[in-house]
Each structure stands twice: as structure tokens, then as C-alpha cells.
Amino acid sequence: MLIAPSILSADFGNLKAEIIAICEAGCDLVHVDVMDGHFVPNLTIGPVVVSAVAKAATKPLDIHLMVENNTFFVDLFAPIKPKYISFHIEEEKHPHRLIQKIRDYGISPAITLNPHTSLSSIEYLLEDLDMVLLMSVNPGFGGQKFIPSVLEKSAALKEMILRKNVKTLIEVDGGVNDKNILELKKAGVDIVVAGNYVFGSNDYQKAIASLKV
Image 1 (spheres, helix red, strand yellow):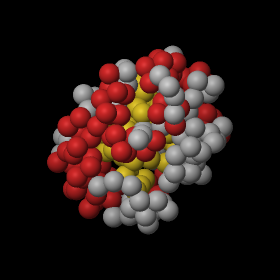
Image 2 (cartoon, one colour):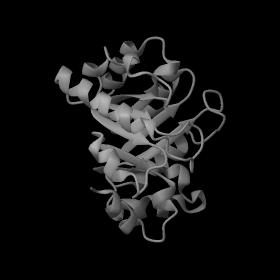
Image 3 (cartoon, rainbow, N blue to C red):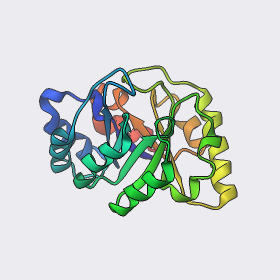
Image 4 (cartoon, rainbow, N blue to C red):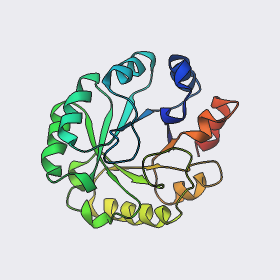
């Protein structure tokens, strides 16, 4: 299991130290939530702060866009050269075009699905995607309770990936902890986003290690 701590739960007064700490503690990716206050009722960070995060991080960035006007934000964050940029299928009218745009930047394209969004919305996009991010909470705020139906959804997505013989990874974001990590593993999840569980712990290394099942 790959671990991507979400900096949404970090201490922003000591952000550089927090980034260095999770990288040294063994995380695999640094998850960055970009919210515009329109697609979700919260406002987070822009490219100036994310550039600083990238400079402090020794692990690749995983940028999750929760925004309207995806193309604008892809162009805004692409120069930072994250490993992944994911956008919400619910907000995108031309997903194929945007996937190609992200790939043309040399970045791995990913699509995010809200808890209620059907897998059928991405069935014909899977071969073009490097990752699918399944939300296990409603996007916008950290610290929410895990929605168990994502386990069934992930298992169904894994079956779809195997049936289509593609290498798309599955990432899950929201309410992940040591109590549900084994179920997530069994459901075919490759990467978990953990915010409160990691940053709310007294030992980042121990918290991250407990999720590496």
C-alpha cells in the first residue's frame, strides 16, 4: 500500500517542517488538496504555496483539484511538475481532452469520483488514466467519517481494471485509518490518502507504517 498524507491536516504555521517530517517518516506521495470555494465549500491553497511544498518535499506531489474550470487550474499547477493531477469527473464536460492535456505536460492524469458518482462515468476513460481517486467522504473538509460503500465500489473498479487489462491504480481518500486499511487492501486499493490519521498522531513514522499493509 502506498501512503499519501494530505497536507490539509498539517500545521500550516510549520508547513515546511511538516512536509519534511512526513517524507522522512516514509510516505510515498504528498497529497495536496486544491479547493476553489465553488466546487466545494472550502478554499485552500494556490500555486505559490504548492511550489513551496514541492521544494520542501523529497517525495512526488499528488495534486487533487476540487475546482470549477479544471483546465485553468491544470495550466496553473502543471509547472510545479507533480506526479499526479486528478480532477473531478462531475465537473468536466470534456474529460478526454483534459486527460491528454495533463499527459502532454508530462504528468500522470487521474480522475476523482465523489461517493455517489457511478463507475460507469469513467468506464470508457480507464485506458487513458494512470489513477482513479475514489472519495470515501464528501469532498471539502478533512476529518470526516469513512463511507463504507467505497469498499464495494473499489472492488468493482478493480474488476473493471482487470477486465480491461489496464494498469490504472486505485486511490481512496477520506477517513482512512488502521481500522479500515486491511479492508481497503482487500478491495483492491493501491494508494490511500491519510490526513488526520497521520498528522493527528504523535509519531508520523509509526502512523504511516501502520497503513503499509
